Length: 84
Image (tube, rainbow, N blue to C red; front, side, top):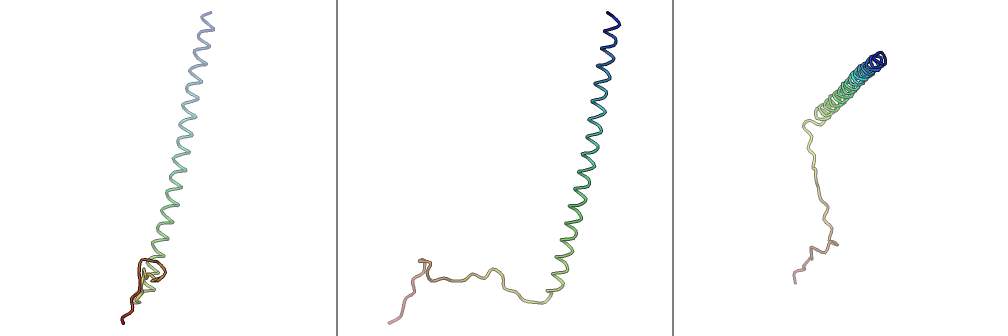
């Protein structure tokens, strides 16, 4: 009876240690994946930044009009008046 209790205790300890080792291994894999994803995002951000700098250098000194709104007389908000 005592021998069975010792065997079951030993088996339980081995299962607990196995779960701990497995969780540590999975944690390291997840940390590695996160590091790789952050590195890829960092490289993409750096590439986008370089593209923006090159675009700015290409357009240096040029004048552009941005946000030009087209006026539409059919909106109903504006009524044209004629002078008599």
